Image (tube, rainbow, N blue to C red; front, side, top):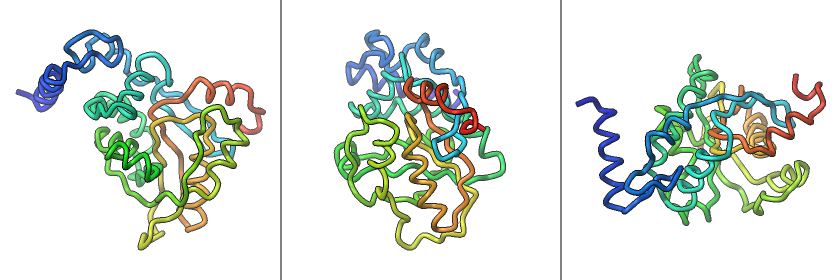
Amino acid sequence: MPTSTFARVGEEIAAFLLAACCAGCDAPGELLCDACRVRLAPSPRESTTPGGLPVVAALGYDDIAARCIRRLKGEGETLLAGPLGLALRATLARVTADGAVLVPIPTGRAAFRRRGYRVPDLLVRRAGGRPVRLLAPARPTADQRGLSTEERAENVRGSMRMRAGIVSTVGPVVLVDDVVTTGATFDEAARVLATAGVEVRAAVALAATPLHRRIIENAPATRRK
């Protein structure tokens, strides 16, 4: 039996044991039904952060993808990292063909204590990559929801640092996060790495929020170049 089949069977057994329902449509007895899996097929969209860093997102943060990500982050449904990682894999391949280092955005200490895992790192692994933790949280940040682009940039300023003992002669680097909204977090991570002499080539997110799309559509043409 192929490895992928074993993995699928394992997911479904776990779903029944946990009396799970489909994360996408609430169908009983399945972690993710076939119809919802199809709707997680990647549809990459490209943009740039306010600082000009190229960003590729595998999915839109809406509908099935948003529900699955919320279950993964808020309800401990780590098995969903499997199908979500598959969506991320093809998008990562677009920007890492030359062997770029995958650097996840660091997870805050409180979030890590609450979940027991780092979502970006987990997604990278399920996408077949190896996360390299060059960055660590430097201070807590406020909830980003409801903040403007400028407020988000201020909120994350100084929130990350290079991990102690890390050699800065790595690269090129591709940053990875689960969700991108304005791109302020990616810009701050890129700033910290650049200060340490690390080349940041691009950023990849599993999903881009509707707000992110509106920001890009309304941005001056010169910013999108």
